[in-house]
Length: 524
Image 1 (cartoon, rainbow, N blue to C red):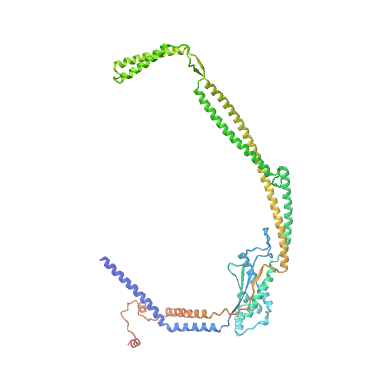
Image 2: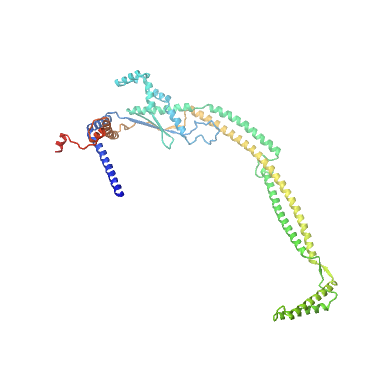
C-alpha cells in the first residue's frame, strides 16, 4: 500500500510540473501575440533607424602611423652601470608608457595644430552647433575658442597603443576627411620627435660624470697607495706574477708543499710507532713464557732403580687394563693391582726427587734472545716517538705559517679588490663621461632613440560605418528590444485577460470559461 501511494503522489507531482511548464510557454506566447503590434512596431522602427543611420552617415577614414622605440645613445643613465655600447636593446613597459604620454601630451597636440595652421577662421558652425554651445553656456560651461575645442577633440580621438610583444607604438586617428586624418597623424609624429628631443636632452650629465671621474681617480690613487704600503710591510709582492718567488701565492705554495711532506712523514711515524708498540707487546708476552734457566738434559749419576720402576709401572698398568676387561673395579685382583701401581708410583717419585737434587741447570738461550730483541724494539720505539714529536712540531709551525699567509692573503686581496673596484669605477665614469658628451652632441642635432617605422599614409577605404554589422545589430536590437518592451508593458497592465489572472486576483478556482462571440465565429 505504501508503494502504491508513493507512486500515485509522484505521478501527481509530475503532472503538476508538466502543467506548470505548459502554462509558462502558454503565458509567453500569450504575451507575444497580445503585444505583437508593439513588438513589430519597435522592431521595424529600430531596423529602419539603423539602416538610415548606416547609409546616411558619412564614411569615416582612419590614418595610422607606427613608431619604433629603442634604447639609443640619446639616453645616458645617470647610474654607474657598465655598458659596452651605447645601445641597450631591451625596452620596458614603463618606457613605452612614457613615450605614449609624451606623444599624447597637450604641448605636442597644440604644436601639431599650429603647424597645420588651425585658428579661429576655421570655425564653421551650423545651427546645431550654435544650439549646442548655447545650451552649454546656459549650463555654465566656459566658452572656448575654436583652437581649444580642436585640442580637446584631438586629445579625445587620437588613440595611441603599444603593439603586443613589440617595441612599436601605433598612432590612430579617425575623421571623415582622409586628407585631414593623414595630415594630423603626420604632424603629430613630427612634433613628437621634436618634443622628445627637448625632453630627453640632458647636458648636465657631462658635468656630472666629469665630477665623478675626478672623484674616482682620487679613490683609485688612495687604494693603490694602501696596497703598496701593506706589500712593503708584509714582504709580499703586489703584482703576484706567475714565477715570482716573492709573491704571496708562490710562498704559500712552498709552505703547502713542505707541510704536505711533513704530514706524510708524520703519518709514517705514527704507523711506525704503532708497529713498534705491537712488537714490544708481543715480545713481552713471549718473554713471560720463557724461563731464564732450563734443566740440563744430561745427568751426572744414572739411577737404574728409576728405570726398573718405570718398566714395572708400565707392566702393572697393562695388567690392570687386561683385568678391567674381565672384572669390575671392585674385584680383589683389580684392587691388588691398583695398590701395587700406587706403591710403584710413590717409589718412582722418590727416586726422581733424589735424581733431580743432583741434576744441574743451564741458561735459556731463547730467553736471552727475546730480551735482546725486546731491548732493540724499545729503542726503536723511543726513536720513532722522538721523530713523531719533531715532525708534529714542524707541522704545527708550518700550519701557523700558512695561517699567517692566509691572513696576509685576505688583507692583500681586500686591498686588491678595493683597488680593482676603484679602477673599474674610474674607467666606467670615464666611459660614461664620453657617452654623455656624445649624447649631448647627438641631442643637439635631434638624433633620438625613436624612429618612424611606418609614416602616416592616406587611407584608401573607410573603416566605418560597418554596414553589415550595423544591420545585424539593428535586427538583434529590434527583436530583443521589442520582446523586452512587450513584457514591460504586460507587467504594468493590470487588466484581467486570462483565467489564471482571475484566479490569482480573486483567489477562487476557475470552473469554466465562455469564449466571446468573435472567437466562436472564427472557430466555426
